[in-house]
Amino acid sequence: MTIPNSVTSIGESAFSKCTGLSSITLSNTVTSINDGTFSDCTELTGMTIPGSVTSIGDWAFLGCSKLKSIAIPNSVTSIGCGAFYDCKQIPGISIPQSVVSIGEEAFCNCTAITKMTIPNSVTSIENSTFSNCSGLTDVTIPDAVTSIGNWAFYGCEGLTNVNIGDSTALIGEYAFCDCSALASIHANATTPATLTSSVFLAVNKGTCTLHVPAESEDAYQVATVWKEFYNIVIEEMNDTSIINQYQKKPDHFSKSCNQ
Image (cartoon, rainbow, N blue to C red; front, side, top):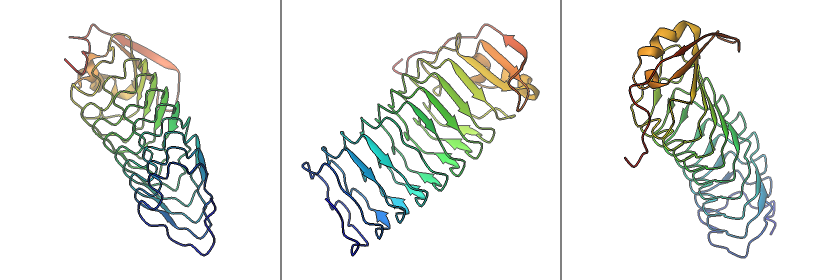
């Protein structure tokens, strides 16, 4: 299907549950993909979003279970809540630097995504944004992000490495719960982020290595939850060379989220 140039707007849920729709070409006159526009188009396999589009609405591609490729242009500034919820076959999405907001559950259950780099234009990661992305192995959170929401990466069972930017001051409940394969955390903030014991539930603090700034060694060794990591590697800022390694026996190791 091809949308003609005369069309400038597509209404909410316009193509929702069009189960026979396998491809669609949008004209470069369309400025937004509205709420639920392509939700439950279960045969839709790919789409190129034109450079005229500035926003992707809530639940826009919800349940597009066969969607394997989608290109988001630099014109897009916002990705709505649940925009790609349950798009289980997308292997990766490049989020452009133009995006300043990503809604809750935007990529929840996108189990084929393996790597995610969040642009510096984003200042917060909302609740459950990447939860149950079980194929995700590596994630970089930019320095601009000040908070990570509840359940943000919950159930990312394949996640082995996370790099948390230097401005993150708050990590919400269960943010990395059930990330049982997590082996390395780079916490770049000089002041340890505030968090509770639920954040790293099911992460093995006895084997997961925590990398922290050299000048913050003492702060992390006494900070709530952070101090429970057995291997704390001290690094110079902007330098990957290890200058010290602190090891301690934690008071207790992580438990399952269900305990």
